[in-house]
Image (cartoon, rainbow, N blue to C red; front, side, top):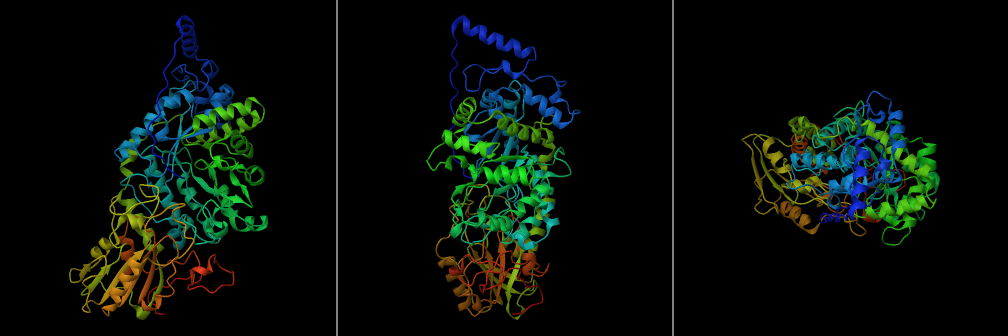
Length: 640
């Protein structure tokens, strides 16, 4: 998904037409006071003000003692076409106001990556969420809004939240229980800002390391992300009604990790049997865990866009696999169906008829509403299809308890960045480290009586070690959020008798140091920007730093901070050790725990490590000879 920063839209001026307009307004207000249904309200998009106030608690759909299905049926029966279309519409926070939610009956609001209130604090997030909820509840039927964010490795849009390792690191850890606990902690921090819906987990099976979203995957085999669907259980908790639970989203359906050339939003050119064998199992596992929503992928399958693919969305996902939650599009994803820029009637018609229930139309949501209304009134989208979509959405809102608890629970706000969550993240970082080389058993390092030189572009940079989808969409450099850098973790791990010297470029090292630790690798990126169609090696500046360290005659331990395997086959023989740290997040002390033997490395490669970029795509069982095979990982003591 992408984020656009736009000014808030102007509110349209209200036209009053002398006596006739006053009579219409009075009648509308009187009918609302009388407790009649939304049929008495103005059509979405009209200039008339929506009557305020919600029906009393003894109305069936507002009664928590009534079964969910009965509540949803009662509410659906009260809805006009405009109410229903509003529920199917999701707008970005920067392009919508609370009054818009009242007027257009919008069902959902989202924050794209980096779209945050000012200041970016937990309290500001909760305040913003409550204001949007005020707008939704002021509409005639008072249906609460469901707000969604990409909390893909912790509540990562919020400054101060705990940032866990990205999925590729958790795949290396290979511990479903650990991942479930991370899902629970993330959900709690989300609810501390009010947010009840997470666009996670990503269950793609990454088959080409050139793809810039590969770090969002747990690994290259279907079994690994399938096992890690335990994160859904963590997020959704014992019940969606639990105040610390959030709705999870399995994404991106289907085959986004298998595009030709690893091109983001590209074409997955596979026979159906292979698509089902490789890319479908994680979604089957997610459905078995009761995942509440599924997001459709940007990619095509053999030339046909997934956002308009009725066979895969309705016939396979909903009918064959029995998915009962709701399907949401990706950011402007339905715009791409007809191949022409901009949202068209053909895009809307094909997407909804294909089985998409909620449209993520961040800035063009008014046009979506108008187009869908026209398509329904013309009979090109059946009312039964609309009712099915709205029923699915309303069911999750009821199950989440949003009608009873629509506002942020401020008692949970203190959980954001809490010590227990940071300790969990540190545990996850340690578990995710994969030791690939350890010549002469140089690791673990001695914390006492040692002289250690630390260098590298990623040694003292919270932003770099956290990667993309951290505070902003593409991520950033420097102290973008509170945390412990890898350098700080190293310094905290050693005895006072050990000297730790740091210079990012390695300047100042000499032969008196017993070991040099070079923390190098990638800088942050997210989708699109992260694709690597050409070379996949270390940057020249990182290579120069490592060579400067080696020239001093000191053994070099390379700590690789990256979202994927890098092409290092030409250099690794000169390194004493190689530790794949992936993108560890805010708790860099977890890397130091492994470097100093506080815990032994137990991570295993979730991806086959190429011997050269020309091997891409490379994966387990394809007959190629990698530098390190899938599942490889050393522990202590070890030498190669």
